[in-house]
Length: 189
Image 1 (cartoon, rainbow, N blue to C red):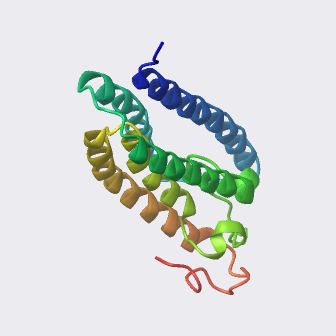
Image 2 (tube, rainbow, N blue to C red):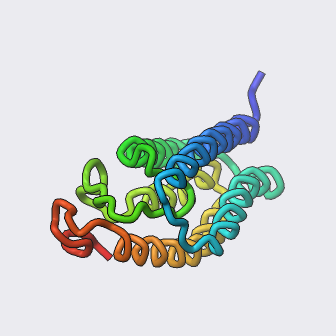
């Protein structure tokens, strides 16, 4: 008996959604940790739009595959699964590197030095690279190209707002005794 690939894809997206739920639990714990140490949340206005986008993205992945009967193209599926796996690995590396400072919100700890280890040695915002890759790749696992395009375009607006807030917060609150000496030095903008 053949299994409809759409069911497998729905299961995959469900696993990604479950993984995101675990990330939200970690983020909530870290939010409390940061708040207890004087963390300051910045730019919370964009947060609901980011949550909405990420939620609709997962629904759209499955809906497009089922409603528009998108085919599974095995070579595309295999390559996009590798991209999704790489994006998740990068995200986990970010979470491990930031430890209690990782959250889904923008929360700065005044006077703390920048984290400049792990993926932050090479990238200013490695988590957003993972998000961009995932928003392109997860839909394309089952050729949901409309979702990949529309959500990628929407993500540009969300990331522009978020990165601006994050950069301003780090500029304002990061300790000046970071290993590079200054916030901007050694970081891409």
